[in-house]
Length: 247
Image 1: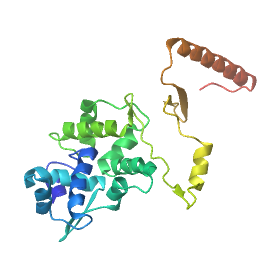
Image 2 (image 1 turned 120 degrees about the vertical axis):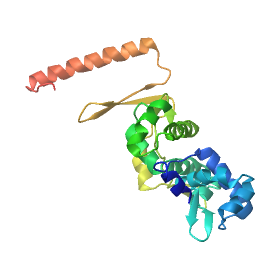
Image 3 (image 1 turned 90 degrees about the vertical axis):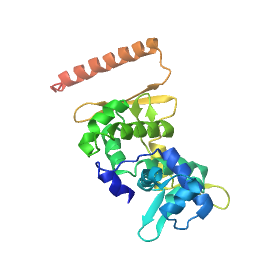
Image 4 (image 1 turned 60 degrees about the vertical axis):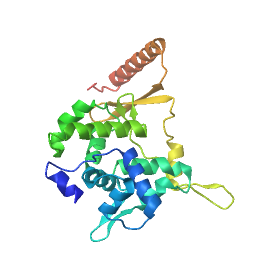
C-alpha cells in the first residue's frame, strides 16, 4: 500500500497538505459519497495517474480523511464529513486541527514546538532524521508541515500556537446554548484574545506567561520593563525579610 512505499525510504509522513487532501477527498465524496472506492477508481475520479496519487492518498489516510479497509478500498471518514458539513460552523476549525494532529510525525513536532519558536523549513528538516524521515524526503516533509501551520493560522509570528477549541456546545430546540463542564472551565480561564500575544517563558521548573498587545510600541515596552524591575525589587525585599534565597 501507500504507507509501505513510503517506508521503503523511511517512516511515513504526509506528502500533501491538509488543504489539498481535503480537496481530493471532497472530489471523491461528491462522486461516491461514503461508499468504499478502490485506488484505481479514485484515480479515474480525480483524473490523475496512479503513480501521482499513491502518496497523496496515503496523506489523506494519515490526516484521517480516508480510511483504508483491505479488500474494500478507501472510504471517507466521519472526521472528513464533520469538516465538510459540520452541525455548527464553530465545529469546523477544531476538526481541522484534529486532522493536523493525526499523523504521528505531527504529534511529535507539536509536542516539540508548541508555544515555542518554530524553525524555518530547513531547520525542521535537519531534526526530522530523529523521527526516521529519509534524507531525500526531509525538506519536503518540513515544507508541508510549515504550509499546514500557515493554512491553519497556528504559525503566529514564527511561534507554533496549537490549541483545539472546545466543541462540546450543542443547541437545544430554543436555540439556546447548553454549556458543558469544559465550557465553564474555559470561562474561568478564557482563551487569549486575537489582539493579545502570549509569550511563554521557561523558568526551569515553572513557566511564566507574558501577555501583551500585538501592536505594542517601544514606549510601552519601556513601561513594561519598569514595572518588571519594580516587581523584582519587591520580590527581593520580601525574600530578604523571610530569609529566602533567590535561585
